[in-house]
Length: 278
Image (cartoon, rainbow, N blue to C red):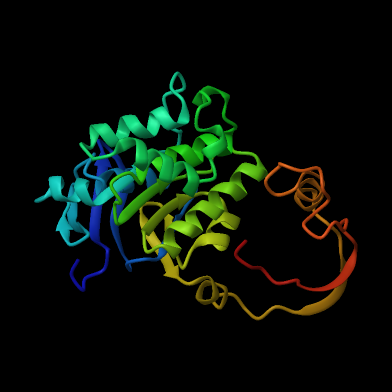
């Protein structure tokens, strides 16, 4: 790996006939960080990921991934990345362990069984390893999908809207998995339309709108773009998500009201009447 950014994108353009999806996209992703590409449906997030993963050719501009030009050296790029799409690509007829073993064999790796067992333990799926993937919950299936993507230890992983359609518990499971990946040195480019997801996970956030990056920075930097907020003391009421997670637990494995056993309470909190990126 060179001293260059793990991902470098400059002036990327892509059109489909008269539809201009990307109109000069620029950004960099530093190694070992989580970079969120935030945008609404149709903003061009998936198109950009497909270009960076060599599945689609750009009409203009340049991009390098792990130091390799995506147009000139697509084979080297593919060896350096893993792509997890919007829908889990697991074989539901196979068990979780068999899915992992299959991918390890396709990558011609030694000891595929040991690799599968290590990943099952790493993603808290050991107890479910011998069950068919069809019996997995949405969060478990997505964790298995990400585990399959990590076989071969790719330094860069693309996650294209990984929590679409998941319930609150499953979303938290995926968030925890993504944080662990970055903590272990993996570079993560995450696309999402959920503002809270970008806020929870990303070291840097780029907002893609109408084919261009209209703003790029840390969460703190983006919040500074708005005027200072007026502060008042008001009673904070628990949200429905707070109530749901308090009742079922974050993993859904217990019926406890929370880690401390306490129920949600109403308290005074400082909130802002100004706008913020949420």
